[in-house]
Length: 318
Image (tube, rainbow, N blue to C red):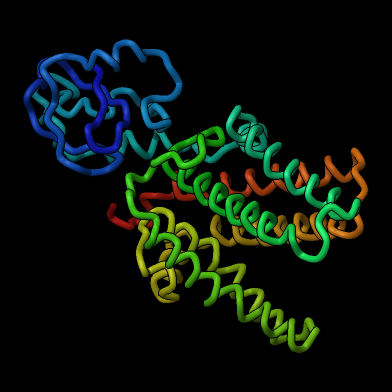
């Protein structure tokens, strides 16, 4: 019998004999009552890849087989006992190279890439032709970059909840109706972890030991801070002690992730800088800009998928 969680919209399954019993959703942990019959929408959607609200269909459709006996005489499993099946189901969830690289290949992902990259290239081409004297195009550039940053955060959120393809913009995946706290925490994280290295380099133009230490701290703490901001929407995103405790629980995979994200960001930044000089509308420039945006979406997916894979070790109790 299939139905959707009334709180987070994940598709679940249970046995007909459990109708009317109370359990807890394995994703949002909130209390739910098993329905008397399958949801009509769940029946219509049977076999679809994406349930309502764009959330990924769970890999194990029997997540809520809450009272399944193992053998005659065995004690029935507890309602909230999901640890063993959940861990075994997640063993393969960290994406392989093809699954990772194909994340932007959704209609929404490709459309956003074309719109963002195309608008920036057209603006730069128009500036070269004298259509935007001075800095009249600055507002449009800033708006495009802000939207790009926001969509990347949505991709992290979507991937942290199991998404495997770039989502529809402004999709309410985490259930938050107020973006204010997320914006505040992102701003605070940028000031605390990114600004020191940037300010130091701006004043000294030096990449000495101090700059390297500040940059290393940024590479170490910023990815976890972004995850806390997206998943918890909590001020713990700028608490170094909380972040270091979270890192210590997944030390080796997180360090590999942080190094990969840092190195890839440098490569993407250099690629973006190389195409930011006097612009001529060439296929090479367009492909370079498109590749930079594509790579940014892949990195956002990788960060969100890290939480999806190591949620239990992080133990943020949500």
